[in-house]
Amino acid sequence: MFKSKVVRSVYSITKSKMLSVAADYRYRVFDFELHLNLFLSKSLNPIYMKLKIVISILLLALSLNFTYAQKFFHGEITLINKKKLEGFVNPPSRPGDKTIKFKTGETAPARSIKSDSIRMIKLISEDGNTGTLVNLEYRKNQNAFLIQVIEGYASLYLTGDLINIDKQGNIVPVATFVSGRETPSFEYYIQRKTEKYPTIIAIVGSTIGLGGQGSFFRKAATTYFKDWPELITRLEKKEFSQKDVEKVVNLYNEHMAGK
Image 1 (cartoon, rainbow, N blue to C red):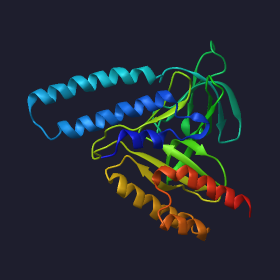
Image 2 (tube, rainbow, N blue to C red):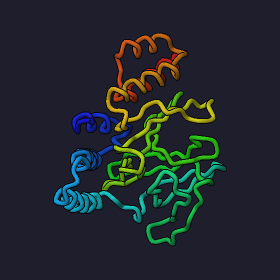
Image 3 (tube, rainbow, N blue to C red):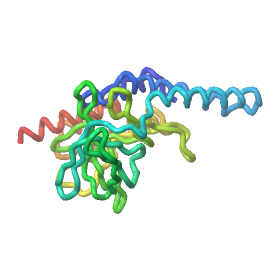
Image 4 (cartoon, rainbow, N blue to C red):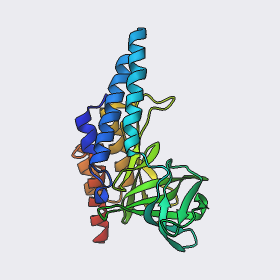
């Protein structure tokens, strides 16, 4: 079981403040729900089960404050053919959504664009930050919109079960409770420009636990960054954990830029 302090520290580190104060609040809600479910699952007492239902409804109501699935945001869509569409975008609510809505102006009619014709979506928040969703083929014949956290020699992406946009227009990944998985889980993917598919480099909030998450990250990272022996040594000495994934990728990109 992971603690809320760890969760906030992990998710508060993003490019261009993509995870805002609203996102931090949302993760606290999900962390509270995690502890609640783990506790209540150990008891079959009807009173506890009713309490679980009531609190789940309250949590759902709270989460609606950060859900704007039908709202359009100022942004830009880059198509596979490199054509760019500037205007207002109704972004995907799930990584695997098949269509995206777009309109040229606030009062213009909306039209649907198939996801398989989209390369990238950029959203500009009210405070001027730009959040980027990239349509990646993360497995053979399987595409999804992933949040771009770092762009460089090796680009880093973050994904959850849902994609939310907060009141300021910042992209917020959301992990939920799903069948077959005990806890919400976020995945970091990494990909060099020369690679066809991205690689999972870190899993945060999964059932493998904090210790397991650290081991998974170090094993994946030592394999992926084998072209920089010094970094491998630091990873083997446990200088970095899964919460340092962005720091590690930035260090790697800086190193490769000097070559």
